[in-house]
Length: 156
Length: 179
Image (cartoon, rainbow over all chains, first blue to last red; front, side):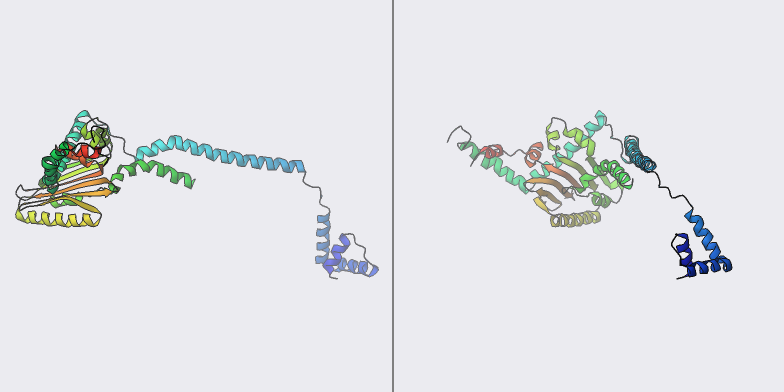
């Protein structure tokens, strides 16, 4: 058995035989380190060993969890506030305002659009498709007018 | 917090991105390259660019034009003056190349005119049974002008032809027939 184990056994109240008791006495008299260890361990054993009261522990837990809930609620409130205040500001910065057009500007746009659509239409009319249209106008259409209409209820 | 910031930025930027969304439309053709053909503002005789809110306002009007642009996302037109033969040849070659590129990208030739001093191409971009875009490329060497137009969006061809006064006689009767 080591000197350290002998010191611990004596302090823990274990029964030592006569040889062990004499060995411990000699050790504590002759070895200052052994004596210091003995004194320190004895002091540690004199510390109060009362349990931390459960009610106190629960109070600490309650406070902690409440703080956590408040923490989460705080973030949620901050996010909502940011959405309410920050989003319009962000949109101001990133989105150009919807332009307001005057009656003149709208009229000019209509004129330009009419020009483009009219040009496109005329170009198609002048092309080979235009020739097809002429055939429709001059030949197919008169022929259709002569035909009794099928499925329109005015003849069969 | 990081996710919230990303969400906020996404929400904030969405309308801004939507403003240029028509450029992603299959019927859109970038006419900037034709503007570049002009080589300077003095040769650019016409530039029309109508999209977004202004187009929406016109679309709300109860007119033929309003009905015509109802499903249109953007309208653009560019006219370039051709004041010499060199530029004329350059423009004609460029237009032919552009026409080829467009057909390779899924555009179809609806109509073509090739005469001595005039070349006309009408191209459409089909989306199923609908026309999702119309582009007209005209080079008139005698008139000294090249005109390019692009209508991006769904176009009612019959309504378009009626708009130009070229109503197809009898077509309405054909559509009314069951067989």
